[in-house]
Length: 448
Image 1 (tube, rainbow, N blue to C red):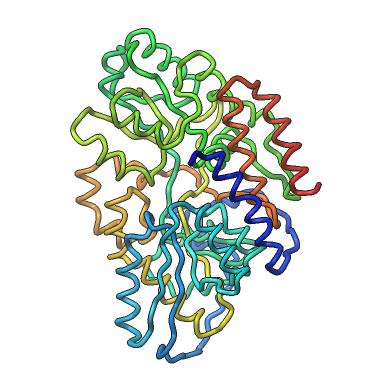
Image 2: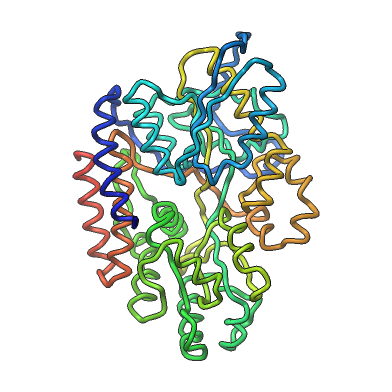
């Protein structure tokens, strides 16, 4: 089933199911909140700001309690280990794991349906851009950060803060990347160890590949996966933002034009794959694509798919001309939906176990996500030295922000507009036209 078909099914199901849940009042979406640096200047705290602990002395018996956890199956290899850690600490506690979904969207659809049926899960793994939706529509609870390991990197907590409160604990973090085929670069007369730093350079490199390696497709820019996240990163790196302080669209701007130009120019001039999703990465692993925008989360899959077939490199995503890297923390986070104190206590214990050093180290080696625990980074020092492509994300020192989306009951539907906008531009619609149409459609969806 293709991406458009899935969207057509998901949106009406969400709308109908949410109608059965308690309606939420839309709140304003703030500008992305910068995450503090790992090492702050002297006299400045590294902790995420405005997190208000809600620690409680409540001690509950685990006997007869079953914790319901929902997550995308492909992203939960560390879940069983976390479950065993908590069960060992609290004998008698049981878990019901639901991992049938494969994406954050599938998971959201499942959770909304379960909530409407009165069987809402206790803990859910969500995309970092979905946190606001869970707060507005599904009753996400404030989380007490004192449960987290002392070595948890406070740098990442801001990605889970909504309206000044911690509602989600990031567990696997990613940044946008560029990956390139060094063999194709060399055949095109390019330096195989130097990727493009801007999209102007990426276009120039693509034209050189097309001229000198006619059998290769110069570039691939995804249009049907991580589309809203990639677009936010492009807009922010061009100096703009997705929403204004009132939660209205702010992307129809010079920064928005700069963000869309690569999709338009590269595909217009036969330098890109056009509309594509995971199949585009398949083409890259087959050695027929010169460059592609990617994510830390795909490093494990790409490494396995490429094997020893060709040499390839990884670097932080290029930026629009005149811009600077300002990336939104992608990946996923845990939210707690139960408001029952005992269940919430054990839910917090589970989340703490899922971000423990051992759990993080094991999972990051498989996927490529940035570990959120400092001790895990130390445990992986040899691994990163031997696998430099995996180390690129970990070594990123540029600015990080929270992932921004629209707020309210139809926020999910509004964000999905970015998919059709990118597809439209990739197939020839002028960026200025696509931006204006997307802005109006989102305003209509939000009722503004």
